[in-house]
Image (cartoon, rainbow, N blue to C red):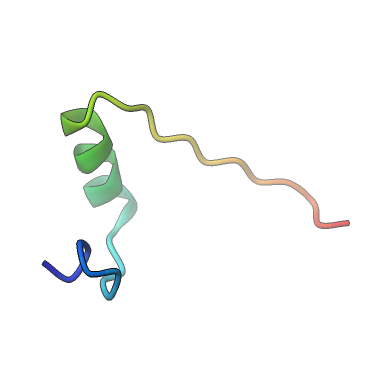
Length: 34
């Protein structure tokens, strides 16, 4: 419920599970800031 309202701080594993249920791929991109 907290995630849905934008108040939660889900773990990467939780985000992966949500993406999987929605048929989506979760990507993490790390780049240098300019």
